Amino acid sequence: MQPKHPWLQKCIQKLEELPQIETTTIIEPFLENTLADGLLTIYTPHNQVKYLVEIKAPITLDTVDTNINYIHHLQEKLSNDKRTLLITDALSEAVVDSLLENNIEFIDTTGNIYLNNSSLYILVRSSSTQNKKLLFAPKITTNTLKVAYALLQDPSILEYPTLELIANAAGVDWKTVKRCLESLYKLNYLQRQRNGTYRIENYTKLLERWEMGYIENLRPELLRGTFSTRENIDFNDISKQIREIAQNQKIIIGGELGAALLTGYLKPINMTIHIPEEYNYRTITTILRIKLDPKGNIIILKQFGNNNQAKYDLSEPVADPLLIHAELCLYPDERLKETAKRLYEKYIITRQEIAEMV
Image 1 (tube, rainbow, N blue to C red):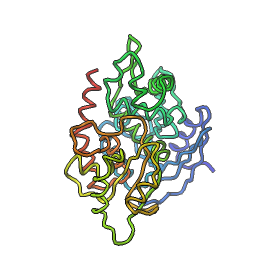
Image 2 (image 1 turned 30 degrees about the vertical axis):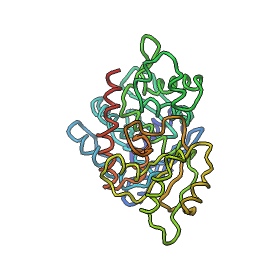
Image 3 (image 1 turned 60 degrees about the horizontal axis):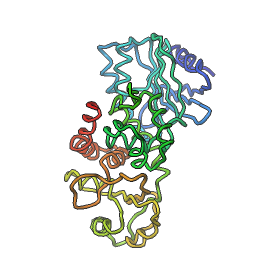
Image 4 (image 1 turned 90 degrees about the vertical axis):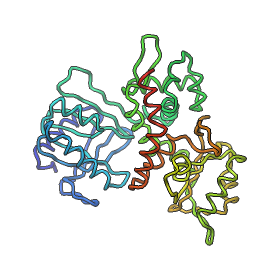
């Protein structure tokens, strides 16, 4: 049964005019901590994506900021696997630009479409003569995410004519690097230079896309398990123990504990341990006397590539701020938001500035 709202009908029609796209819509309000106008499921050849639909009155430059704040506030209330889709009437180019800049996914009745998640990337500007871009998730492979990490960590690495430095940092071969750079270029995350090299188009957008892909695709591939302490073992004692043995075991400390070590701000209640690829995770679980627990506060991840550790003058092996920042995004409470902000301002913003200069 088709939705009754004419704007939603028109927007779905515009979406389904694209190749390899099908949708279903639950028309009645869908409740998850908040009331939305419906639940839209988009099917692609590779996956399906569910969106909570928010239908808004025509948005102008005077009201766009209010709507952006509302969508961000709504998104914060949802679980990580739920996304919000703005449905509205015809948008001006200036409003479209503002929504894109703030990564607000939307469809309007004239066919402006922006969807950006780990399963699907679509950008269609109805008033533009540029080609429509319809790109499916396999373009953002875990190898592409590893390469993107290397670029975000050191944007100047793109200035070198050979790809070996990127290959070494990402832990993939140079042919894979070449394919991944081409993919990121086609997705508008990189600019191609006259000499054949690349530069980052927009550091913040690439960072946001990498964090999304890390959480939804790369991290599950690296995850070795979630654990908790056994009875009568205090988390602080485990923290001290892992800090003592990390250096000799080639273990890197991340998550909240890593954030606390880098910022001196947070009192951690969980930690992420990044272990070498060849390392048997059971060795560390035995040493720490921790047990498998899906609700635990100790996460063990496999390292990838060769640059997972922060390159600062630190007495302890702490994970790179990019990895810690991404881990903090998994738990969006206020104390972690403030910690992530401090981490960004102390470490990551410098890399953004380098990306803008090269």
